[in-house]
Image 1: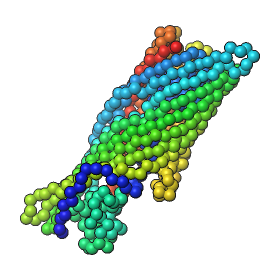
Image 2 (image 1 turned 180 degrees about the horizontal axis):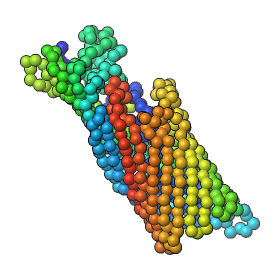
Image 3 (image 1 turned 90 degrees about the horizontal axis):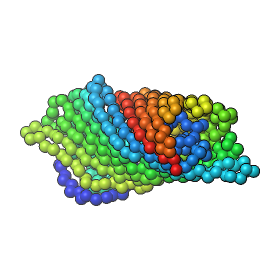
Image 4 (image 1 turned 45 degrees about the vertical axis):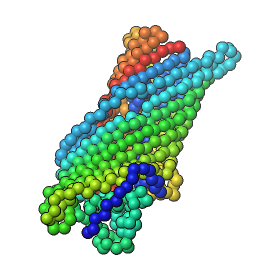
Length: 498
């Protein structure tokens, strides 16, 4: 087969569509346990309590519980460990990050009119890093059945050979670009070298064991800035509203490596390859929250809160590079490098995450302590990409495989004079109907705080564990590594009463 050399210049290109996946949607539909150290120490069970700036993310009525103006700043250290098992080979990868996790303030305006039942009005501004994307995965093992060639074949079959053989990478849509890469690196061939051919075969030898490595490294954040207003009626009923501005910045680099031990034939065959992909997603979003807290007695409190969908406007930039090492009888080993040096800048698209309903109960033991329980319902099957007509297949798939979930949070606090001891537990159901794809999350937390008067210092530790299956690619080579993820988060909050 005649080999063509394409010289591609660095630059940008616009493509009609990129293949959005379910993992892209869940990245923004799920949140970590973040916020003030007190909030994290009690596993976020604050829906009926309020009185903490991070509690506004659960129930916006919580700002009217404050007695005085306050400002808080939280720094945190997140350490993640991902243990992988791929065809019996176990590997491990760690990642850590340190950042300003929360900052905000609340201003309380008391009504001094004794004839009014509306006792207080509060406004608050709070920023939180709702999701930390800094993470690393490494999986390796010997696959006895499937090669990466199936990925390129799955995209190429059905595409006329002339659509990409005589066209540059930058002028193709996503599917044709994958076929182009596989063809230019001699991983796949057309069955018939004619423009109308739509069937392809592989140059990767069959029948061998395929050693594969997959490295994924990501960084970035999902931030939320909340504008809050709340009021108190007879100091028995608290009502609040949040208007939330979201902004996200996510980068992910993946590198897949494969070699095989099958004997080379007289035909042009592939023995080793590396496939690199880099994704950059950025954008903004909006959501709102409504909530109420009722003080049934001096000890018993009930809370109810609604969080709307988050409507994101997102942008993707994507680049790829493929290197294959091939052999042919009588020739020295050669490298076929397909590096378009092009960044695909895709048309903006929208993502609507599911709404959330939270019911809460808390019991306060005077000034000595409290116990609090939150239960939230969230239907992930309502997640949608838009415009709908461009994502019908993906949206239908998410509706079928994602589920309506429950989340339980329990927190407790005990005070010994100026010292506060705290603990919590949280359980979050898998967003998938098939919990093998992603398991349930279990987390534990604890912490302490000390009251210096107008200044308070809080420290917390939170642990969370979840198992999942991580497929290297969405089609073709869909074999998965079993991932056991463990998160350890330490947070320190400094609080000032103003």
